[in-house]
Amino acid sequence: MEFDVSAMFNALPELAKGARLTLLITFSGLLGGLVIGAVAGTARAYGNRLVNAIAMLYIEVIRGTPIVVQVMFIYFAMPVLLDMRIDALSSAIVAIMINAGAYIAEIVRGALLSIGRGHIEAGKALGITRVQLFKDIIGPLAFRRLVPPLGNQVIISLKDTSLFIVIGVAELTRQGQEVMASSFRAVEIWTTVALIYLAMTLSLTLLLRLLERRMKIL
Amino acid sequence: MSMVEFDQVTKAFGANVVLEDLNVSIDKGEIVVIVGPSGSGKSTMLRCINALERITTGALWVDGKNVADPTTRIREVRQEAGMVFQQFNLFPHMTALENIAYGVRRVRRKSKADAEEVARGLLEKVGLADRGHHYPDELSGGQAQRVAIARALAINPDLMLFDEPTSALDPELRHEVLKVMRDVAEAGMTMIVVTHEMSFARDVGTRLLFMDNGRIALDGDPRELMREPPIPRFAEFLAHIQ
Image (cartoon, rainbow over all chains, first blue to last red; front, side, top):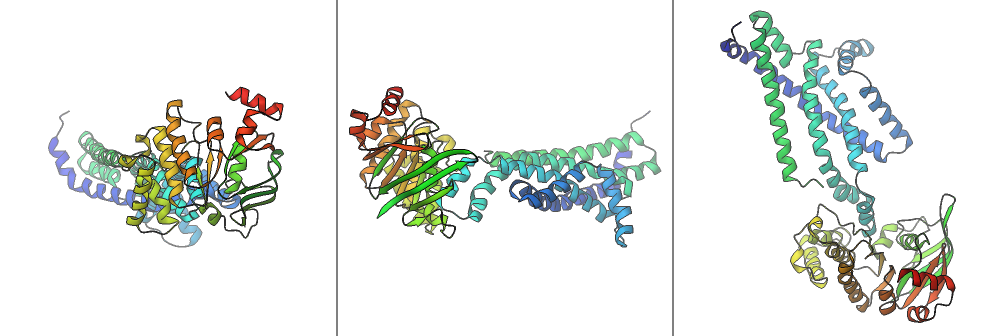
């Protein structure tokens, strides 16, 4: 078989559209995931028994079920239960949100609990308020420990969006399949798709390294 | 009026009684050195004063406020009782200068410029005028502990608490911390110091408490007690530590 480079170029416009959607799903999903994760992680670390239990239930349900099942549930089952329409793109974003949120919650919890008791006591001993303690001491220290595992989660979530092919949202993998169906150049198309994913994840890795270097990880 | 008064204070962690019926009154200007075997309750006693540990029963008056009273604002007590920890506990994401200025800004509500001026003055006092822009991990243990003392002094407390301030330091670094503590004492600060440094107790202390099994076994003048230990337990302790 002959490797046809022009087939790669011909596919690019359609694949680029897919890549844009992949990035949109990943980042809007992660934005929500960060909020959910921060709340659930803080609840796990400092919450009373009730909020801790609620947060734990959420985390265990999400971590214990496949993301494909989660997105199918949101796209096909939720509309039946709630009697409303949810389009594929929104379903995809919500799926990343609640899925990444659960993993980020555990990252946040770990980062918060890793702050040494000594630093917290030093803050308390100065007579600062709880809010100041959280904002000035615990928060900044926890954030530094959050960055490496959070970067990991960003890459995982980005790749997870390829699974949303099952609900027909036109992200990169889905676009690859569409182009393939008309051109039949499997090797060229899937090579290009893989390279685009790789370009996105490697850029993220690079960005993360820069961030880590700028910020002393303590 | 006394600066710190323990009135029938008991502290227990679960079934484990760490402090038992403690009664002691400490006046303004005293340099009280607390010694005793490990597990005797001396650190716990110190940590009760600024409510890092809450007492189980009794009353504990600090600067006129009872820390056992739920209506007492604990933050106000802590703002008048500076604390120095065994492990320094400097904020690792702040420079030496920022560590010292932080409390001044937050607790005393000074502007950034004013707080840094206070911090610079204190850095000079502890002999680290050239270390202001270094982060804690760039300081030696002795330097870090001197910054920690400056941080506690910066908010201008009425009382200073030292929890084994030299125990984590190499022997050759201890004297620089002890010298700073001596300077603080000479400036008239009320100090309560948990330590194993018997020379500090003898030379700087105005009063010595010997703790044993959660009780104050001895209370008196450090020089006299050390010259002629009145009880065998204290004699044993001294022999052990030297």
